[in-house]
Length: 176
Ligand SMILES: [Zn+2]
Ligand SMILES: [Zn+2]
Image (cartoon, rainbow, N blue to C red; front, side, top):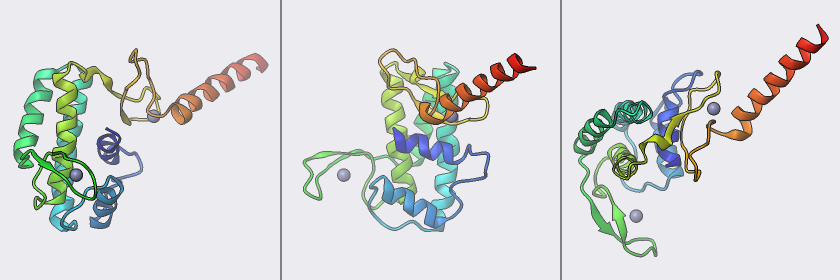
């Protein structure tokens, strides 16, 4: 689910769209090992549109609006032309692909991520999809902790930054 969160977060960044061009789409695909036809300009448009939909799903899950999440996921699966099949390549044993190999790379990635979210939703795990609680961060993450207690996108940065801020505030209150 890391790729899905990263894709959604690329559109939530306060420092602008982190998916600015076709090269960014290709490097994202490479990083998450999506093979196939190279990304083209249409993939940038497609992926941004799919990303907005995935973000909508994440927000619906977080709000507990499972009906809306399901509607958006079904639409996304249809729009990306998801077509499940069993593949075997690069020395890997048989495994499931959500899309045909010749489908546009943006559609293949979005279909794959939509399927991941769909599994969470049908397993009653939608509440694991959350937004970071840091006041300075809007990143989505999937909480895979056993008791669903995670509050920050990355406890090493966001959780810690808050800790430091609280510490400084206490210190300042004590000396003034
Ligand atoms: Zn494969
Ligand atoms: Zn955060």
